[in-house]
Figure 1 (cartoon, protein in one colour):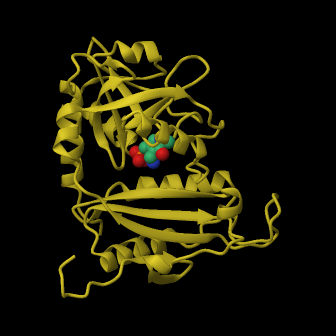
Figure 2 (figure 1 turned 135 degrees about the vertical axis):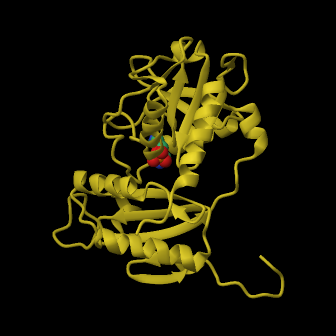
Length: 294
Ligand code: PMP
């Protein structure tokens, strides 16, 4: 922020109004606050463009449908608000957050007879990834997946994810990979998990209700197919990950991030994998190729 010049305060959008971010608030009986009865979506913004906006909105609509929450406004209106918020906040690199809850109603577990869904939209700037992190890769720890059976819904109920990420932070790690009862890795706490085998096959868990089907994951699957790399969408065990040649995570904020340590074990030669870095470049090239629709 430049000194002397008064910059516009950051704005949020709350139930039909643009409001200074610092004053933005929801009702204490909002079911998102009371019960985590809501969903969210995070759309990355790169070069001023919303990356994969349509698939993000598809996923948002799907999450809402699964919970029988109505879209609070049309998809076209959501797109308009995203752009207006980006404009007001001068956002060219970062994220647009959308959070929709079942709305405000007197506390009672069952769905209220009449409540209008509540919508909050915010933006956040993102700093470029540190070159050090990309050059060295990141560490992940592993822990038991204690989440529910509908991880395909992008619910705001994130306690296990928060506990996992905190455990990772305390261990000096970037992420925590979660392990199911069969000893297979499901995903990170806010990113999908991938490995590359000795035969140069890229492996990531198939998308079902045990993981969130990342939009970055889907975009990368497409790039992998286009570039002709070998791919398997299947479960892989912690043991397989530990002895993999390469590993990485994908998400809207990490893009493709090389993983060079799993718990106390180096992955491959301990350096970011060649294929991983190729895929990272391909994904960034893909984002750079995007143009504003319409
Ligand atoms: N899994 C979980 C649990 C997540 O929270 C995220 C981040 N939204 C992802 C995977 C990656 O999804 P995306 O590529 O859409 O950011």
